[in-house]
Length: 631
Image 1 (spheres, rainbow, N blue to C red):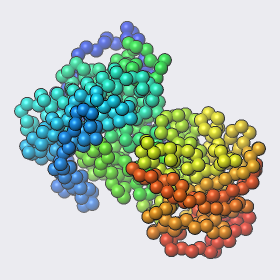
Image 2 (image 1 turned 60 degrees about the vertical axis):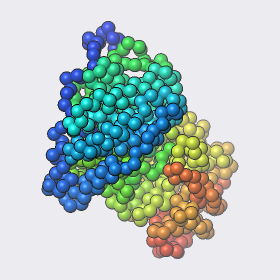
Image 3 (image 1 turned 90 degrees about the horizontal axis):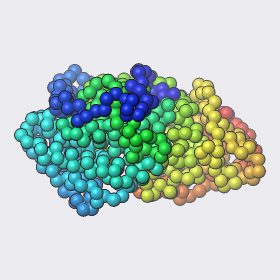
Image 4 (image 1 turned 180 degrees about the horizontal axis):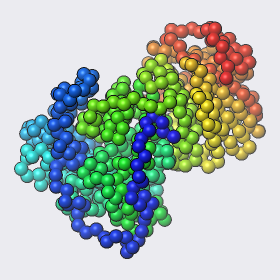
């Protein structure tokens, strides 16, 4: 259940599940993809968008001053990035990092050329674009070929905006860069090495499909555009449906949700705005589909995916996880992640509110989406209508919070049922894991993600705030049954069962305190170990052991972890923690209890930074600075 925004429920795409043999489908398509589309630009913006965008930037749209300043910031960011020094990518081996950096600079200059009718910006965009190699066959690494998709999307947008600017007479060379890179990506990804992608169905597949879709929309005077467009529409729809739950939860976590969105948002939005919401039949290419799931020569009917309820639920899932500072939590292979949500403002202005109220507003990542933010948002903001405490059993989380503002408390309990949330790549075994943000600070968080090569540091179960059974985690996958109780006010509970063992983890928001209660019956288990990870370590905070639990001190907040129950307490030092791009360490509180049965409650009490609370514990009740706490 996605509660932050009650999005309008529109009709399913045409023939959502309809796959037919080519001889029973409508007549086969011949020629390019929609050659009747002749206006420019058609990806990030349409011709009629220009005056409204300029009015917002220059304070002529009647918007609030702070909103106008946000548009000015976006405009200035585009201007500065257009002026940045552009790398010249090497062709052999293909320098994917330099290629996408150059493509982002070219796209930003092309946007300035279109928006301001600036001939110097047009010349620079063209010059940088023409330095980008189009033969990517020397990039022989399936880990990094995904970056070709980022480059292709930006290259297609550059050509599109230069066409729309009308400032350059002959753009045949620029079109050649788009066509060459699209052909190289398609050859490398679909034709030469499809086996790799049949096995791995993840963000690589989705980004490639969406990037080829953008290329198809600007190469629609060429026959190959139909091949690219068919692949883009059928694979984007298939992958989104297969990698999400019916409630929109994305199996790869928030980071790769954002990463995929860099190509998916521009593609689906452009298709929607340029071609409308009619359904269409497309040819299916089985090359990168999982084994035995596709029939060569079949065709599929696909409607306007921008309006597809499953796609809109996918966007809303990220919003449902939102932390008070606007970031998405580090679930699975994710660091703390911001999201370019204002690019979805046409879906619902609550996404613009989300972006506008991020402490560190998303401006760029590997794929620069500043132009999308500037173009899609009309200045309206709509605050969330969701209850602060909300739960999605299908997606496997409950969020307990005091509100949606930056100073509110936010807590999440995770336990994902078997399905897309546990079977797609980048998954962590994190049943029962918890995270806490309060007083403007991250107090308890998952250990994070520095990048694929370092994920082994923090992807195992012990790196999450759960319980070990004789040193072992609960089973993963189909061997673990997950059952969520209905949310009662701000109390959430989930039952985990396996091989005769039962574990109920419940959490309740009591004003500004989280009470976490565990009841376990695990026959044959001698020792149960609670692991409570904190945001600590160099530059972040210090965790100190107390006879009642532990006290975390940070610069701006403190957290008392008060253990109610008979447990042996200790600190674990130097546990692995990851920030994006580096490996770090942190501290955690360990509580050990004799099995096989146990009941333990922990009060998580956010405090002022310099707090030294008076705490007493008696059985299942604690008193903190005179306040009685009991689950």
